[in-house]
Amino acid sequence: MFIGEHAHSIDPKKRLALPSKFRGELGESVVVTRGLDQCLFVYPMKAWQELAHKLGTMPIGESQTRSFVRVMLAGATDTTMDAQGRVIIPDYLREYAGLDKNVVVAGLFDRLEIWDDKRWQDYKKHAEKNTDQIAEELGKLGVY
Image (cartoon, rainbow, N blue to C red; front, side, top):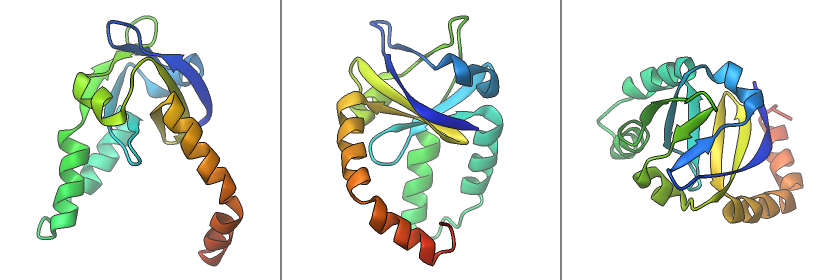
């Protein structure tokens, strides 16, 4: 399980070192794709295969479903970590997430998210202001 947030940077060769505490669970190969809220999602290969299977079996007759599946699957890249735990972030994914140099890698249960540092700080401030309201809504669903 992935939890926590970690400040990292993308080097001039477009490589990002993933947090060492996550590397064992990630394995050698990961999938990086467009996430929600203009961040990137990073999945271990097994979790990605499970998600991709679910996405691949969604009804293609609905335009919103087709769009979401296209964004997630066509935007994905599989990559292998080097000996230092670095992965290459392709230009199209860096542009999508607005990543320059300073990023935050956040652990979120079965995936990692990669955020531009400033965007993460802004997002977090907004979310923290609404935690009571969010908790109430989750309580109605029996989650919290």
